[in-house]
Image 1 (spheres, one colour):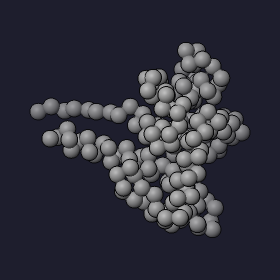
Image 2 (image 1 turned 120 degrees about the vertical axis):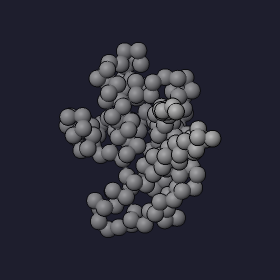
Image 3 (image 1 turned 180 degrees about the horizontal axis):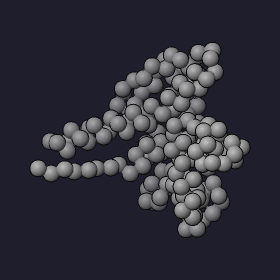
Length: 167
């Protein structure tokens, strides 16, 4: 009997690159460059080779935060910086990877029209709450809508890999 562990490195970010068709993200992965260092380099306007461990950690937090729809307040709290500085990181992420913002906006618009969002394998999540008049509730649903195709597709891929590995 053997216990085996597998990991798809930066799976959600790779899915984001694929689904958003953001060439800069795709190039980072095609070139086998560390995505967190690449984002940090863009955020801090540094060469990738000059990114510090602290800057990389910030890049990683921004990368995953954006996938989960983090706000400037949430990112600021996580990084122990001001909300304004955190919002600048989020804004600069979208400036660095503009097709990601376009993808997220299209995702929300499509979800409003169809009433659902889905993974790359067609598993659906209800999006009815996007039209709720309660702002906080609606923002929570928007975060779920942004996240579901990425995290849900990653989960689907992992389950398929587990079944195939068993075979």
